[in-house]
Length: 194
Image (cartoon, rainbow, N blue to C red):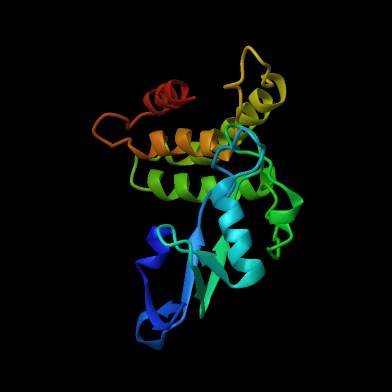
């Protein structure tokens, strides 16, 4: 609340808006990251719900109503799990929801294959054709690990997503021709990264 209020100025008594007559879009990432209280609700989200539903929130010191004008809210979140909470449908109803599905293997190959192909273009001819097989193999390992190593209460850290896949490719992107300019050296690096 303090962060957003720092971007607002008082227009009239009890009415606040962005400075200079501008409009404000507040972006909140990881909307479902705050922890639930012992009563089962998530206080930061309840504050947002109050503002979206009613156009105001309360001053934290004076407990007076503060109407907030010319501001919109944009939020993003990952699916619940891995430290991210489910939250109430009451809060979810305040938003127009857009779901971006996880990319399929063809899309992943295009994304990461393009990146790796561009990286290996400067390497020797025996290394250049490795980009696509490495990408396909990395995606295959990622899918197998995500399918076989499911989270359990004793292994709750077994949560895999495309970020894990991108870390392998990021590791490959650190390769330089000085140290990795043969097929065996690049494959050894890939084995290390996976």
